[in-house]
Image (cartoon, rainbow, N blue to C red; front, side, top):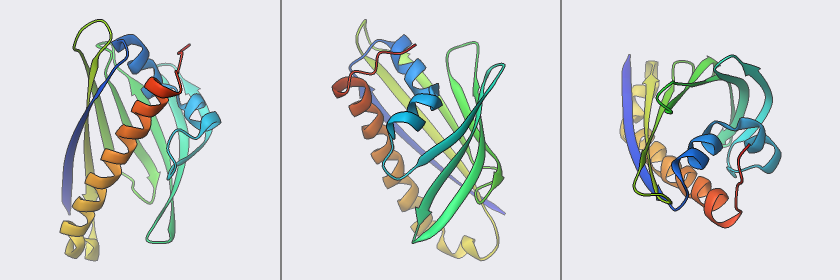
Length: 151
């Protein structure tokens, strides 16, 4: 087995507390469809986060995963696919204040690649990089332009 590790970052013009809250507010993601290519459903609370179902199409094939999102005491968070198409995939989300109304978001995607999919490593890496950039921009739009208020 091999792993693909991809990193991305985005500066968002909102306070760190609001950005951190939006990134773990999967009920909001479910209600408002923050990400065009990801359907979030069946959000269930856990003591330090939640569990949710994520569905998306990749090359026309439906992928479905059960994910656990965990909020850490330092304000960062982790999303893990615990079952489904991408079991073992981990997203690590870190947040750094750049002033009272600026937050730098960094995300690392660590995706295990099994079997014949290893032959597609370069294409998979490019696809993940593109998807990560799009997702970060969709979160920025939700926070800056749609005015996510937090809970």
